[in-house]
Structure formats: structure tokens, C-alpha cells
Image (tube, rainbow, N blue to C red; front, side, top):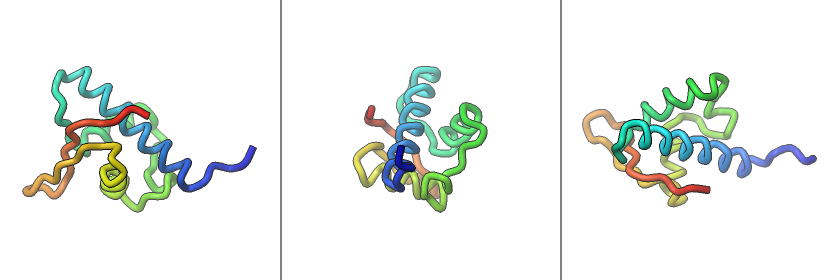
Length: 91
């Protein structure tokens, strides 16, 4: 089996983010979730998670690219500079 390509790894990371987002929405009953909350929950679910393994220099970059691909609906929080995720697309 060929090793995963950079694109494969990115898709896997986005899938993990969407799964985590959906789990948090179900748990909290609301659709707007902070990017930082998703990262914390993701680290609990997959303690070894590191965005650099998936080809991203930061978690923010991972979210931004997912937004650019239409995978996540993002909104930038002006005060913190972080992201609020409003919806995620299932893979």
C-alpha cells in the first residue's frame, strides 16, 4: 500500500475536525463552536493529534483551508482572531 499523500492526510485531518465538530454540536445543542474547543476535544479523542503531521503549520491554517475548500463554514472572531465554526460538511 502506498504511503498517504499530503492531500490524503489533509482530507483525513478535515474529516477528524468535522467529526469532532458534529459530536460537539450534538453534545451542546448549538451550531457555533470555537475552533479552540474543537482542537481541545480532538486532542482528547486522539491524544497524538498534531496538525503538523497532516501538513499544516497551525490549527488555524487547517481550519482556514477547510473553509476555503467549502468543508467548514467559518467566521473570524474579530476580538480573539480565532475561528468560530458554524457548520461542517460530512465526508
